[in-house]
Length: 256
Ligand code: ATP
Ligand code: MN
Image (cartoon, helix red, strand yellow):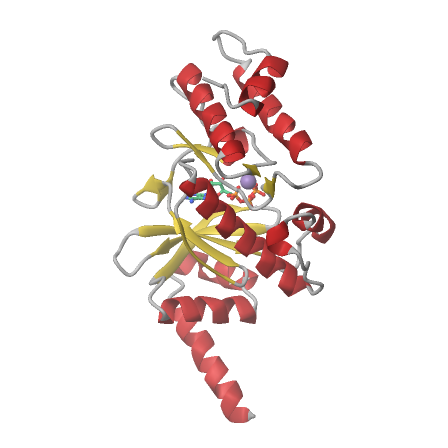
């Protein structure tokens, strides 16, 4: 027994050694429970990650950190937090998804399913030609993906910075919505200026709650996503798009 404890302690210490930037170190560690540290340890060991650095964002259900891959390139590490997770909400998004026919009953099982849902959604979106962060790895509550930005500096979200060319940006976003719908059979379901980064055009992020078209509310989420985008761009001095016409065109696969 004590040998086993020693071994785990050693692993935790090794994981802690890769947590860099001393000023952030205690803050970072304080949000990592033992399981999360062990999962990070496995990722370090398997050559998926080399380091984990400062916090990029602290959200309601998890944090995003800057990571370094063994080849020196940046990565974004999204770590879902066990304690503050809203389980009612996420169960609603998992229901009806054939990929998650069995909804886990334990908290940790649910979080694992949630992280893996975001990973699978990223793969599907990317295969459909939608610009999203390239997914690199998922394990338990940790998702590793391509870093959008450069030199450790994340690109702005569309909430933080207005697009320079609003009309083509709106078009690219609605085309992405259409591709997601028709090619990936997915609806983002939380699309707004907060979940779109601007990096040489729009990049859709935060896709864990995206649902398949079989989901009972997929059409409602689809309309809400489009409404949010149209409303955002109504604040710009560009020709307005009619909401009902746009929904109809995207649904019919005729949005140009
Ligand atoms: P929130 O509750 O604030 O919506 P969240 O838990 O839903 O947070 P995301 O929306 O996926 O998490 O990401 C939060 C923030 O982290 C983003 O607004 C963005 O600034 C940053 N971020 C997310 N993914 C990446 C990425 N791949 N590359 C760089 N930065 C990222
Ligand atoms: Mn978000």
